[in-house]
Image (cartoon, rainbow, N blue to C red; front, side):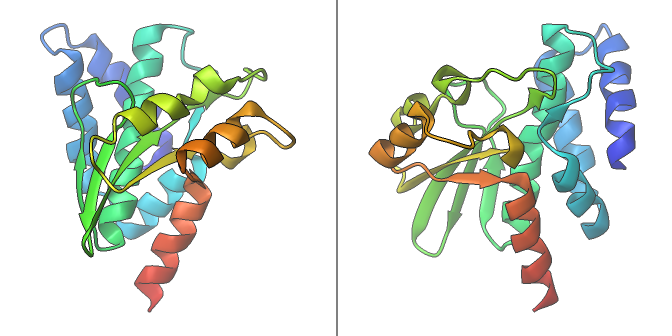
Length: 181
């Protein structure tokens, strides 16, 4: 599925009254798994931005965000990790990854460009830390332009809980360079 087709696919999935949210999310995951490397890099390049063409409707936004949840799964798989996208809605984590004697949980974020004010509750760093449940690492994945550019409580929380910030662009860079070598 090409990046520009994601919005169309969101709307198609929403028009099927017989499907529930879990089914719709699994459809995105299955379709994302079939993406070429070029498509994955394209998705990572524009990930985390909820298009303004989607209504300010929680269902549409959540389904688009589910697409963004699938992207770290794809990227981490391409990096050689054993990865599972978490389909049920738990406190914070969207992805479990295992490899090289360690485990991690990741939480993927998506925001509207028009939403300029973000605070620590938007990132749920403490909740991500709490959902580790014995897992070695936790990581927040989001669009880099959404991370604060100056002092912020978000930065004190990531230091306190040892939760690094990774952008979709950084993940794309890692995937691209892993596959060149």
